[in-house]
Length: 358
Image (cartoon, rainbow, N blue to C red; front, side, top):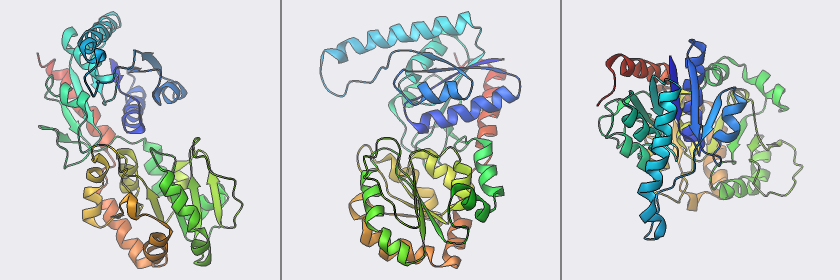
């Protein structure tokens, strides 16, 4: 069969798209991705060996302007383009993951009368998926507290090698491969995500306390961190880590924003975390973290309260207490869904079997 997978912009849209794409390809199906020129999909989709078809980025205008008057016409034009592609390529079904490319894909699927499946990665559904839910009963959600009505809990599709690799890795060996001390407690900091400057600055300010406590830091900062060079014992900074399975396996605790992919990956691998929700937006990150926090697998810290003092008073004691780490790890793992990709695939197959919702 041939499938069109639409979505992009952020990792929360692109990562589950790629996880499903890889599973479908392994089962002999053809997959085409639909995205934009500006999102993460522009780099990540071709890197994984999939074709990426792009359409113009189509954000919903937030205030009254000439763009809001032209938006319906631009949406219709993109939707008709997608419909033509669905028909010319004999696409059997469309799966949308939210983001700028998804709304035209949903209309395109409806116009072409092919089955549609939507996957909502965040606990607070975005505009595109709220729209797409009107066209299909096949609605997958990553979190049980999602506000997308009629959703079926599938979890967040995660690349199989990431979770299985992290669970099967020896932590000491993973640390050696990353250039870390195999015996020291390890703090993973993912500071390359949206608006992570405050996290990065707090961790750097806390390095003397962390080092004095015998804790080493694996700090992934991204390409636009703007941090000064730093050569400190027990501190390893990476711009990008293409071995996240090793990074997770090497770590005893993580500090991160609460993006949907991050929360789901840490939970599936049983990695305890301190989650610092991004303070701008609709508050979706706080809701993403709700289940794992309620279970005791993570702690929540507001961005305004996250600083070097918090790390000294809360993070270091957790990392210094193996029983606490074990309890948090078990709790995190209890909320993780490790077969989410297979669950979403099964929903897709069911949609194909039953036909379009029209």
